[in-house]
Image: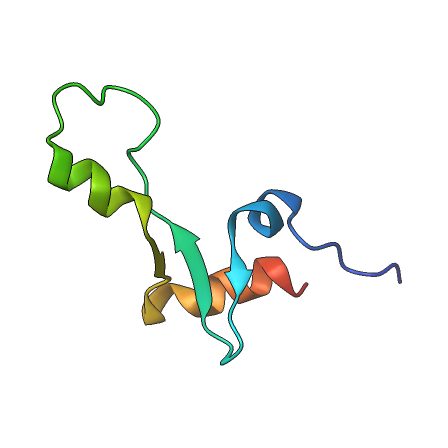
Amino acid sequence: MPKMKSNRGAMKRFKVTGSGRIKRHKAGKSHILTKKNRKTKRNLRSSTLVAVADEHRVNKMLLA
């Protein structure tokens, strides 16, 4: 049986931290920025962690 392939799109979007959590970027920062205020755009810049409920699903895509 051949090896399982990891999801290449997921590999580009997620990074695993040292403690094993999964880091992601926030959505909504690519276009239609004129109607968003400064504070919103600034908060979208920072990265955040994947929710605990979704971690198992994302891990399967990364480590398959």
